[in-house]
Length: 319
Image 1 (cartoon, rainbow, N blue to C red):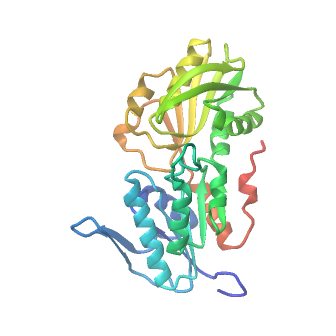
Image 2: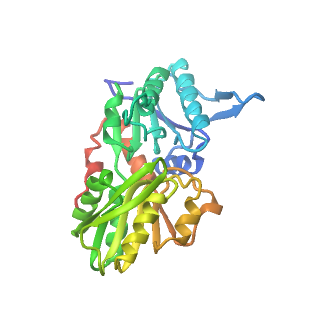
Image 3: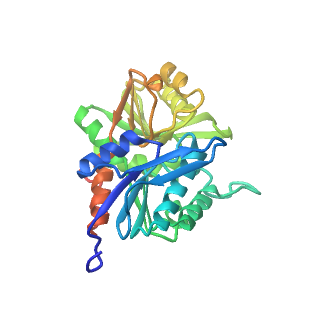
């Protein structure tokens, strides 16, 4: 460090999404740092760093996706290894932040796992967190360290802008995604609609009503993640039955668990646009899926953090 600015940085990666980590490091013009993350025979995770990080600004890229617990522990142990190796600053780059859906006490005796994970990351020694489209914005406040919260919507919006669709309507699949849908609608200069639903139990949703005019329009259903795909496919089928001209689905995080692939394949969705914040196996990739990369955005954000340049420009959603 010189005059309060780090003079060198290194990028490391866990095992969760090596492909994205390599793409980010390639854009930044740096090879990934030499490290290995393996397991002992009883399943315990073992981390070894094979190069010095003393006094260096380090970035650990790791999505806490399936297997969530293993990937989270890998990240925590890598942070601890960096701290004990006297790293100058430790930046946890978490494109997909797991355990984010329990962000409040929805009913008596609920845990708040999003806060628990924030505490674990801080206790392990992280100095900064860089993530994208947290399930709830207030999760940023669960940390007592800086959090840079990137937004995936502009990447998706630019894709649709280039398609030059007529009569577009952005659809929020539930009330929680209205702000996200409104931001995209402003970018595309089009109206929005809202799916009014209720959720009788976790991972199950039931459509109640469509608020807004979707008849004869090219509808874009926007959400932060697609997990079991119940919400987004129910919404797609409902608006298709109510006269939508075509139906597109867009999401930042392709979790795609359980019956998601089957539901998406059989749904009324014409095209599914996803960001690569977590890996999707080839067998889960459908012909109507399009993947867009978040690597350039993360590379730019990490470069700006290293050089102490504002990253607020990266949040710009203007046309």
